[in-house]
Image (cartoon, rainbow, N blue to C red; front, side):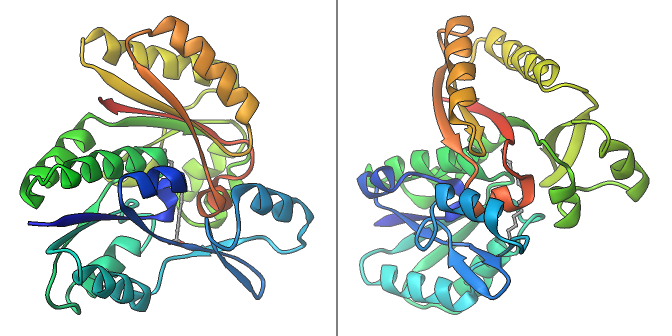
Length: 280
Ligand code: MYR
């Protein structure tokens, strides 16, 4: 069985890695007024942050159309028997649902839409592992079982400079009163059951980072081999500093740096920092 991996742009897997592992990417869009851009194709993260600073319009985002999915799946059906299509959490975007709809419309290939329950490099790690297995000729069921195992082991925490982006986009779950109280501080955020929730109310970024390091230490001490990505919204220097510090503290963990690109940064704002880890 020839299997191929599709993921969406919010995994932010660099093009060179996508090409190396034959991962196909379907882009989400960012919109400034009447201008619409497919992220990672029409607009880079750097261009987006520049535009966010200079535009009088606040950006919004949108999922790929069903037609884009159908077109990609049909193209892949010529060379593959199965497609595993891995997407950002189904409760923050309709992208996964779009993959399900398109899967029902294409013939000659079996499509397995997969809800990562996360996004960004957490999802990226899933897609890369899955693609390596697909290249080794593994069956889709074995790849999906591995994805479930990775998903169960995943933890990710992130913080934003300004919570109003998440509130405006309606992606922060909780009552208005709770969200109102959080706007004054910088809470640590995570995902529970596919939704973004405040994890703890921590007032400063330094304290929040130390709290994440302690959470990572708990998992490292359980003895599982872990990989970990530091994810930043236009804060590469800070991400590098965090990586240097963590590499000294946790020498057994594989660390990398990734980024919050245009669509996710539309909802998190510039300056957001996250740390995600899972089984190696
Ligand atoms: C759409 O328009 O369909 C896309 C909506 C994307 C919402 C993004 C919300 C923030 C996600 C943060 C992910 C952090 C992972 C470590």
